[in-house]
Amino acid sequence: MNIFFTSDTHFSHKNIIDFCNRPFNSVEEMDEALIKNWNSVVSNKDTVYHLGDFCFASPKKIEEIINSLNFDKLFVIRGNHDGNFYKWYKRDGNKKAKVSLYPPYFELKFENKFFVMSHYPILEWNRCHHGAYHLYGHVHNENPCHEISDYRSMNVGVDVNDYLPVSLESVIDQLKDRKIKGH
Image (cartoon, rainbow, N blue to C red; front, side):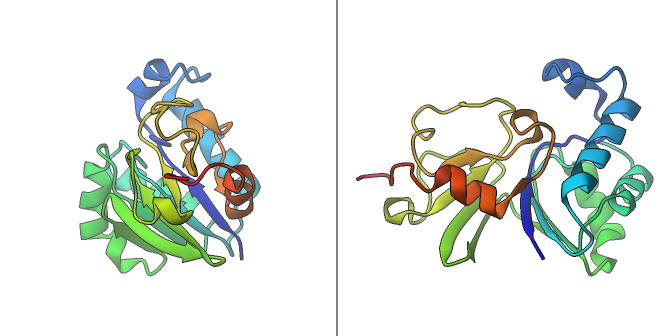
């Protein structure tokens, strides 16, 4: 079992193609590429933490996309464009033992390292002065907050990660040598 992080897939969100200058000609092409990329790195034995803005579609389409993705467990941290996902989850999704919906801020420990996951980038996070990692999305670009980009903080959104989920190992490798806030 591996652990992956991603954010801001915006499945079926037509306007995101222009807004983020994504290299797709249609929503169908984008959804197909995002699903293919996801499934190229995530297996049916893996856990994925999606940090918000999962899908901009009807409950039926959300169900289709969920069923097309590889994962053993999917944890979605609610983003600002997850209203329909939230409705789907409340109606149907919570019956799926492998899909969970969390609030926009969540803390967890992996491999003896403390992680703060949020849909939004934040300037300070719990234990940031003690080496905790902060993973976020929402901003769709590389360095939205120069105040945090030198620290153990990372945008896991698809727009800055080749439209792929990022593995726990890759996150730790990329952030391990960055400064700890206050040091």
